[in-house]
Image (cartoon, rainbow, N blue to C red):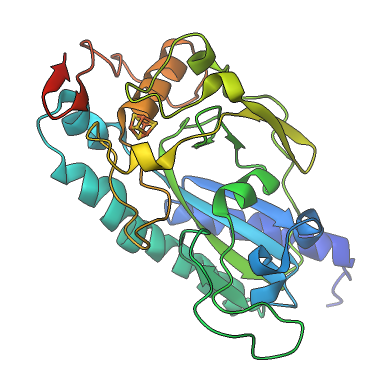
Length: 295
Ligand code: SF4
């Protein structure tokens, strides 16, 4: 029996479709693919090819932070469940397993796959260049920037990655591969409606909404406000220190600002993952300093 030859383009489309179907079967919630050309304007010390020079595609793999994981922080009564199911275990167990299994799928099909955890891009170099013209290790990719390039989402006004499916509720990791996967379309419709410019969402004044500027990544235009992360590092409203690097950006995904963002997106029908009942049921508590609690 003779086989019908397929073109390279057809082969790439089939591999991409099979890869995405596999990702779905292992409960990946978000997947986006950027071709390497979309990183042409990225500096060498942030560039995927500094880690894997033959990389053709950058895959963004994401899992949602389940909404109930934020409940204890929203009510101000239980913070540990978020730190495990919403951050540490989600990053280092559930999502890491998805990333690794998706990498195995690519390698089972003959393509090298480099799995990458989301480490803070602010981390300074920890060594010297081993060849002339190479950046010093460790090269750190900006994952949120990569997510925009892969069509997964956008950076919202408050500086957090927002996706159409979950708003700010996700963790992401990357796979660099020499597989010529078919890239996804870039985000065409904004998720963020810049509510923080109309109603402040940070009791500490860390989000400078009036100084927001337009940022463009691969033609995706976003309005992003400067954030004073020195205030976020002292924030007692659900923020947590960066687990990898002390002066890296703190984890704000359960902080009051991000929970307010989530409540706003859900109330205004701006995210796809919806619920029977509203996320925000009571006036949120706020701590301005140790002596002033407002609820
Ligand atoms: S983490 Fe705290 S200080 Fe930083 S923007 Fe959010 S609410 Fe404000």
